[in-house]
Image (cartoon, rainbow, N blue to C red; front, side, top):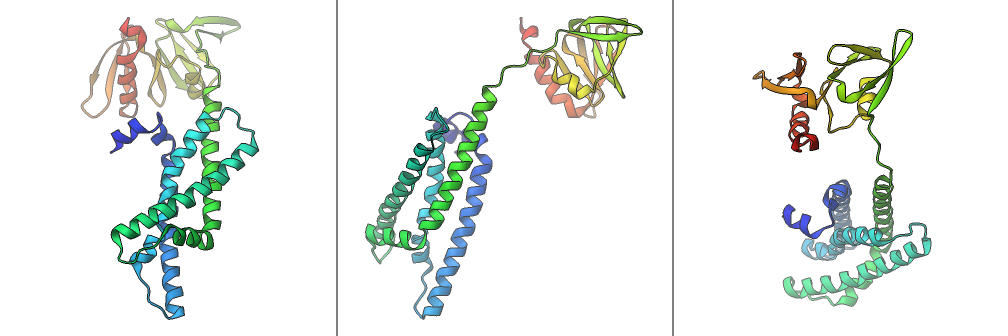
Length: 279
């Protein structure tokens, strides 16, 4: 089922909208339960019979919000200008109209197929307008806002310029400043409040955190192997398992660095998928 949805829906749609779908599912389930209880209480107070199946029949329209989420996503993805309030308002009105018409048709078909008592489309339309038009409007407003925010966020993220990784860095060595070509770096270790940039035969202290420094490096060349250490993948000669989830990395300068099990999967993925290694 998941594979089918991944083919039908836009790329990464299930991932991006997962939380929205879960929130909608929980919200709709609660609303259906509350409205069914409300129908029961009204029937009991008014002195007429309560039929659970009939009550559920008139709650079918809540299920229509699931395809609506997909339609909203497709609409905003194609919309190039996000500041046209008139367009959003027009879509909001059309969405409610479409929802009510579709509910009338679906409800009528279900009643003829599965119920002894048959209800026409007009009955469902009147019921939805009288009982649920406010809640339908509120939910569509929330859906539009959620989907609009998600799409705009994705657009803004994709439009950000790509960061150019560092190739050289200037470090302080005594009273002098030294330029280090990062291709010559073997590993970078944390030595709070500094980091130690280690070359083949030399090392330099640099005033920066390990995390912030890693963010400026090429992710295909440098990988974190421990909470206190980053290594240059091109300097790794081999690695062996410690049989406890951790590994020993053997560097070209003869040093052995511990690879923590926490970072093992990321290291292996980058080690065997690094463009430089494939060439």
